[in-house]
Image (tube, rainbow, N blue to C red; front, side, top):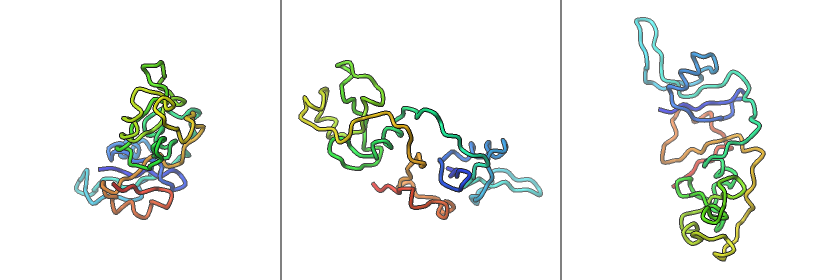
Length: 175
């Protein structure tokens, strides 16, 4: 089971495993706003239920540097192929080295873009120019990312307990 974590201002922040949420609760980092029906601990007088939605009690500090990761590259590229422009679910996108590794291209922000599998295969082990393809945007290291650092896919079904905490700024993705 997953737990939705809200920031101090009640905005969706991330999704964690329920065990991590319980640890955060006992560490005094969160308060529980919604619970699932399932009990994780019972005594004669107390029942502890699995947390569904928790809120951070302290402000989330901004990091100085954005971590290079698949999800962050996808967010920078708006979950779109940087060659054909189609917006797709993360599982239908892959990394593409603009300058291929075989030609000395490094794996860093300025040389990686998201591409759909057909465009990635078409480009193959060539630069966009050699493949006759055009990049929609030049890859750069972002200075910031959207507040929401996760996407919720419809196929995973959103828990009912989350419904009142998700706003228009969380994009629901369909297959």
